Image 1 (spheres, protein in one colour):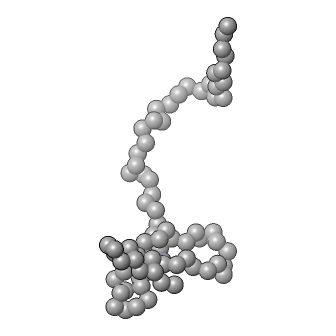
Image 2 (image 1 turned 90 degrees about the vertical axis):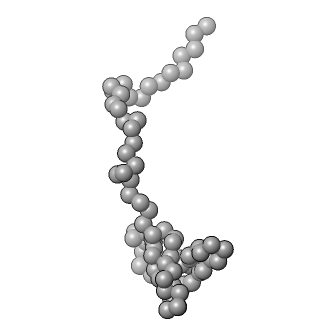
Image 3 (image 1 turned 135 degrees about the horizontal axis):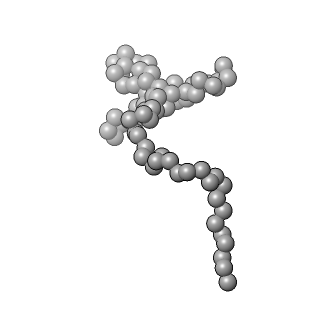
Length: 75
Ligand SMILES: [Zn+2]
């Protein structure tokens, strides 16, 4: 009994695409909005930046900054 389960979609010659170069990967964009309180303005939002494709009028996410055990959130 022969099992033929191999299905190859592309019969192109395999290229050396196994080596990924993390240097080219873009770092995730952070929001970076400073805290609204001047005394805490050194805290910046570490949430991912808002998607620029969002329609206008979309409410901003809740900004947050984790500082050790303290978690700051602000609008
Ligand atoms: Zn934010």
